[in-house]
Length: 97
Length: 183
Image (cartoon, rainbow over all chains, first blue to last red):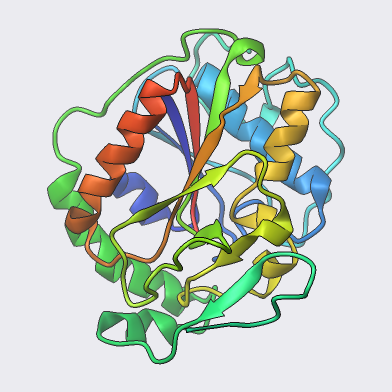
C-alpha cells in the first residue's frame, strides 16, 4: 500500500522518515486549509496525489509553497496532470500521473 | 462525559473534563504558535529518532490513480459520534469511520489543537467529502469502505499495535493508497 502523509511540523516530518511527506507551514487543525475553502482543500489533495504518483524515492519531505491566508487557490484544472507545486520541488525524475 | 451541541449541524466536540499529565502541557498550548510547534517537537522527535531507524519503507502505486482505492487516516481525534470518544489525555486506540459518514455523523475528541475551524468544516482534519468528490469525478478509482481515526497519543511506541492493526485492515481490504492527515 502506498502512503502519503501531510505534516505541519517540518522537523517531525523529517524525523518520521516516512515514504512520502508533504509539509505545510500552517496552524494545527488546518492541514487542508481554511473552512469552506474547497479550492484550497482540493489543491492540497492534488498535491498529495501527485506525491503518490511522482515521488521518485523514499524519504522525501516536500515543502509546499502556500503562505497561510496569503495565497489564492485557483481551481485545479487538470487532475490527470501532476501539481506544479510538488513536481517543481521533487528531485529531477520522470514525473507522471 | 458530555456531548455538547448534539443538535447543531456538523461534527460535535466532546468534552471530557480535566486534562492530566503531559496532556495538560499540550492542552494549554497557544494553538498554532511557535510554542505549539516547540512542544510537538519536544515530545515527538526523540521518539521518532528511536522508532524510525532503518530503511524507509517504499511501495510504489501499483495502478493508475483512476483505478486506485483510497483511504484516509486522520490523527485529528475524529470518530463517529455514536462511537466511543477518544481519551483526550492520551489514547492508543483507533476508530473506524465508514465512507458514508456525513459531517453530522462525526465528532472530534482532541484537546491539543484549536478545533473551532475543524468543527465548522471537518474536511480540514478529515477530508472525506473532498475525496468522495474525487471518486465521483473519477480522479480516483474508489473511496475505501472504511477510514480510520486516531486521537492524541504522547507515546508513539504505545500507538504501534493500533497502527499495525490499521495497516493490516487497509491491506486486507485492498486499499492502494492511504492519505495521512494530522491534527
